[in-house]
Structures are given as structure tokens and as C-alpha cells.
Image (cartoon, rainbow, N blue to C red):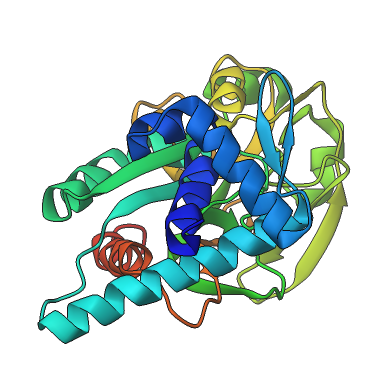
Length: 298
């Protein structure tokens, strides 16, 4: 068993998620892939993958082995480039996760520019508003819009994400426009579940005073554009990222309320594992993202 070849094969299995796809990419038969994987598990003395009829899921040991094997392979590739006098060329699969609304409207052009510059990188992007586990789920980079807590991940801030409180003119004409944060308790408040609490909203005035206002309403959803559509239709008041409601505001389908009391802005950030040797594909994507989003949301 060639340990480097088996490392490459195992990393390919994790990144593709299927033995058949790994076999195709490595130009091997599926039977050979299965045998080499079994041989690797015997050699290491532990199970790396849990197999079901539908999917492969790495065990805790499998995740740890993948992360270390990936670092070793990338270090070897970089060392070879140094010896031959070549610049390290980004290559392989770049696995990204990003929020649904932000990713669908703001990442297409960036990814096109990135792949045009680095054609040897295959981008695999998953759009989801839930908070994924970057290590357990095998992502190279995760984009998040949040007030981030401390973690072992490296964080590169891209831009601020301004949150606005708004409602449709029709709703306000029917229910009245609140004149203070306390009056929100009398309104139907629509909750974007991944962005704010369903029990209270935290608002800050221009002097920095902070209030937590108890709110309630008849709609909770994990998709910002669904909430925006309901708000436009006159269902209630909501807090949403400005990039989601900007079009509604420009068309007169929404208006900002209580402008002197607004939610805290969040950061649009890239997160990635704090590996000692950062792969070329991650480093170049992070650097390009920082440049691309500079001044876009300020």
C-alpha cells in the first residue's frame, strides 16, 4: 500500500462524498477503491467512514485523518513547487458554504472571476442559512453573516451587513406606524429565524442606548426572501439585512420605520480552519473575496 496514494484517494472520497465519484476521478474501479479504503482502515486500526446505502459520513477519526492528510498533501505540493522554482498553483476542490440569499445574489460574479483566474480549482458551493460545522462537514471556507463568538477558526471580515426594520406602506396605513420601540408589541412582527430572536429584538439609538423589546408575530421562517415577500404583502414588520430589502425600498414596497432605533449591524465574514499551512486555493479565494467586497456594503 502506497501511503501517499491512499491519502490522495481518501481525501478524494471525502471531497466527492461517494466511492463511485472518487473512483472516476482517480481513474480506478469502484472495487479497487473499496479495497484500498479497507486496507487503510486496517492499517490505521480504526474505522474512518460510516457507510449507509445513501451516503458516506466520516467518523471523528476519519475527520481528523482527512484534515491531517490534506495538510500533508498540500505541503508536499508546495514543496515540489519550491524545488522546481514554480509558483504554487491553486488546484483541487474548493468546498464553500454561504447563506442562501447572500450567496445567490452576491457570489456568482465573484466565483466566475475566481475560476477564470484559477481554472484548476473546482468550486463546490452549498447555500444554506443554517450554521454548519466547517470541520465536521468538510468545508474549506464558510461565509457567515453574524456577530461572531470566539472560536478556533480564522475570521476574515469582508464588510458590514446593515440590518433594517421595515414594513410595507399598506401595513402601516392599516395598522399605524409605531412611534417608539415599545409600540412594536402591538404589531405583527415577522421573524427571520437565523438572523434574530423570535422573542425579542435588540435595538440601538443614535446615542448608543440599547433596548430589548419583546415582540411576537404570526410568521417565522428560515429564508429572508420569503419574509421579505410576506412583508411586502402587508403581513407585518420585520428585521432583515439591507441587501435583501433594498429592492423593496427602491420600489416603494417597503419603508424603514423607527429610523432612530435600529438593530446592530452584523459582519459579513469568511471563516476557515486555522491550519498552519493554508492551501493555495483557500488563500487565493479569501484574498480575492476581501478585494471584491471592499466598499460594496459600506
